[in-house]
Length: 319
Image (tube, rainbow, N blue to C red; front, top):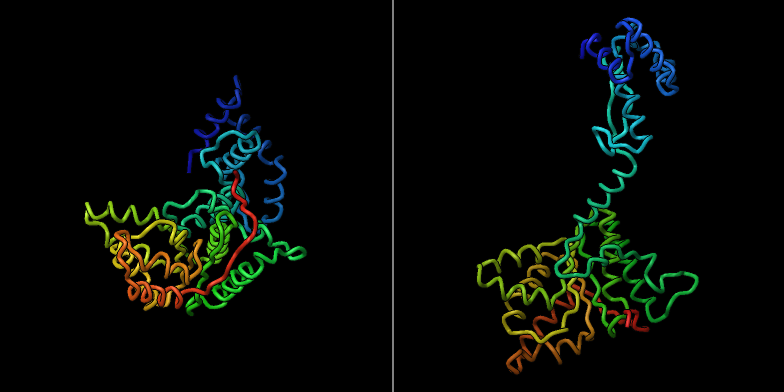
C-alpha cells in the first residue's frame, strides 16, 4: 500500500494545499472523500465489515475511486478507459474493482458476434442484416412473395436453437436479382451468432477466383478446409459465373461431399432454381463440355443439404 505521507503529499500538490501541513491536508482530503455520497453509502452499508480505521488506511483507494469517477463524469480519459470503479471490501479494508461499462460490454458483444460470422468476399453491410428489418417481415403485413422463405428461415433458426447438434438442412433460396436473398441469409447468420453458432458466408464466384490463385502458393487445401468445416455454411450467388470442371469438382464438390458426410447445415442463394442450376450451369463447363453425370452428383448433395424455396418481389437494390 502507498505510504500515507507520500499519498497526502501527492494530494496536496494536486489540490494545491500550499502552506498546509501533512496532518491538516490529510484531514481535508479525508473529509472530501467522506462527503462523496456513494462512498458514504458504502461505509454505512458495510460498517460492520470494515476495520475501525479502514477509511484512513484505505485513503489512497478512496481517492483513486473519487478521482476516476470525476474523470469519467467530465468525459476525460481515465487510466482504465471504458471501465467503471466499484468499491469492494478486502481484508476489512476498502479496495477497488473495475467492471466494463455498458458501452464496453456492447462493443465486446458486437466483436464476439462478428467473430462468429466469417465472410469471404461478402458485402460489409451484410453483417448488420436482421430478421426484424427484412423487408416483408411485418407479421401484420406479410409479403406473400417472401413469406415462405422467411417462415422457413425462422423454422431453421428455431430448430438450431433447440438442438445445435442435430442435422437441420439449410435453404436453397433462388429468385431474381435484388429481392433480398443474400440479406436474408445474413440475417439468419446474425440470429445464429446471437446464440453462439458460427457461420461462414462465401460469395462463391469470388471464392472460385481466389481458389485459382491459391494454386500458386499451394494453399488450396487449407482454404477449402476452413470453408467446409464451418458449423453453418452459406454459399452466395452460386451459378452467377461459368464454372470450370476443376472448381466444380475439386472445390465445390469437395466442400459439399464433406458437409453431406458430416451433416452440416448449408445454405445457397442463386438466380437459378435447382433444376436450372443443374441443367443450365453445372453440366456445362467453361470449355462447353456437357457433363450431366457430374452435375447430377453435385445436385444430389445440394438437395440433401438444403430445401429449395423461391423468393420473388421487386428489385430492392439502388438503381
